[in-house]
Structure formats: structure tokens, C-alpha cells
Length: 287
Image 1 (cartoon, helix red, strand yellow):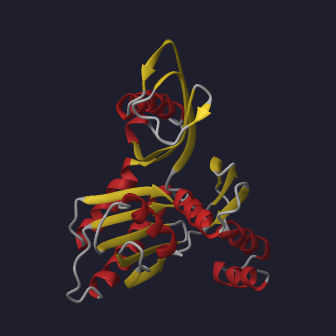
Image 2 (cartoon, one colour):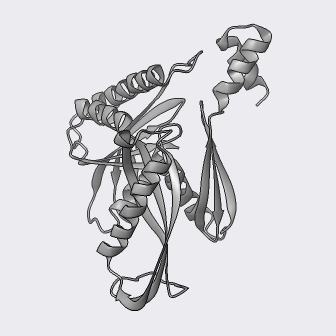
Image 3 (tube, rainbow, N blue to C red):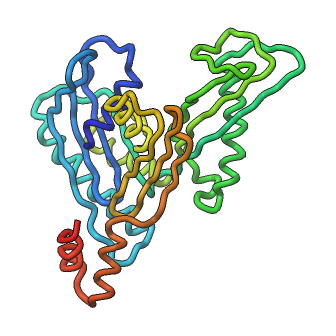
């Protein structure tokens, strides 16, 4: 799972890369952390050199600080295992890290620019408009993340319309109306910094890229089922569930719920007055 979805991030980023590319893939979830070392080459199947997944210890009582500490400890164990398996192989030049809930917030933003006279669309002015909207978004989510702690980890423009018509290559064209839909992934600077420090302890690279897991998962689903344009997909993890709605081959919305597998284990443990380990066994019996 880790390699399949996170590799999509790497291939999309290095679509013009020639020759083999050695990358480190990191999957930060709410129940476990996965790390894989892979060799990617265009038009060839990815080769997994080493991989390890480490569970995040079950939290009887959720605490954001203890949960972050537990995640980082599991990340360090996974990184250490993969680093030991390197055995003279070429170190990775790039690191791709996907974040699942609750480590990110995913938002869709719509931008509409209308002017009385036609203007030229450039990548610079389009992203300037988007940056202005990002500033508004940071203020909107300040209850979840204080503005000073917000880190923008990914921004992708997924649709552009000029004068009401969708175009694939808008740059250099003249228009009086521009509409754009973008997907933004945000996280906590504290979380991002802690992950960077753990990775830097074992693998020294300045090329580190973050992304939201639902975006990578959507790309994988689209490749596997190219005929499907409208659907809902779920990512149920230890502490959270992400529900994403896709319409006309675009992610319209993603909602996260702080209710995953561990929620039911706690409920079973409380109801039957039993230990979490026994509750987890009971939970698995009915899956």
C-alpha cells in the first residue's frame, strides 16, 4: 500500500526525469508508519529495495503531544530498519512523504477573477491569486492550527476555465474571466519539522516533498479504474477516517472524522471492562 500510493507522488513530480531514480517513500498514518526505499524508472515497474512498517502504539487516552511523540518514535524505528538494509545501495536523492489524517487538512479552493479588459494568463499571476486565497484559508482554520503553526505542504491546480471553457494549457492566453479550482494540503509546522528531523538523522537529502495521502490514493484509483469519473473513496485508519468525493474526475471535497479503528477498540474496552488487547481481538473477530 505504502509503495503503490506514494510512488504516484514521485512519478508525478519527476515525470520528465530520465534514467533510474532512487527515492525514499514515507507514509505517515495514524495507526502505523511505513518507509520504503525504491528505484523508479520511466516505463518500468518500480523496484522496492527495502521496506518496513512500524505500528504506532495504541493510545488509551488520546493526547496530541503523546501521539506526536509516539508517531516520531515509530518513524525512527522504521527509518532505522530501512537504513540498515541499504547495504551499499545508492542513497536516495529525494524523499516523498504522504500524510494521512490527523496530520493534515485538505481543502478545495475556487478562484474567480473577472476584469473589464482582457488580461494574459501567466503561471505567476495565477499562483499570486492562489496565494492571496491561501492567506484567507489560514485565517479560516486558525482554530485547528494557529496561523504561525500552519505549513502549506502541497498546492495543486486541478481545473482552469477561461471565459467559461475548461482549458489544459491556459498560460499565455488572453481572457477576461478566469476560474480555477485548487487542492491545498496544510499541516502543522511542528509536525513537519519533527518528521524532517527524523528523516535527516538517517538520510541526508535536501529534496523532501510532502503531500496528502488522499491525493496520492485518488491518482492510484484513477489509474486502476480510468473509466470511473464519479465515486466516493474512504481511508479508514487507526484514529481517523477520510471520506473523499470525486465528481467529473475531480476531487470535490474531503472530510476527515476523528473516528477510526481505535475508536471502536476503546468503546469495546469500556463496555466490556476489558483490556485494549482483548478488545482489539474482539474487534478483529467481526471484521
